[in-house]
Length: 124
Image (cartoon, rainbow, N blue to C red; front, side, top):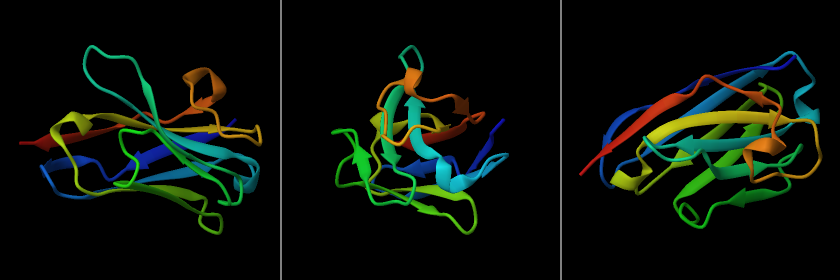
């Protein structure tokens, strides 16, 4: 069983930055593909970004490409999401997700493990 704990959410003004982190435990971290999803009120959970086992491949939703950067530290069992140039439409609960498959999935069904979520609110 994999446990995921997110941190780093908060309130920020439009144009600001935040860094989310997710700490994983319970399984060899380098055997986990990691992803970030978000869910705004009244909307479905959507893919934001994903990263392969050793960080050689990164993937982004079109809506965040060029503004968000995903990275992982396999020595610390953490994955991070650096979010720059934040917009009010980025407001959502952000979830860390993990899966043992080698490829990065972009749907919620591609991930077996989920964190509890962290709120990101961007004010205009």
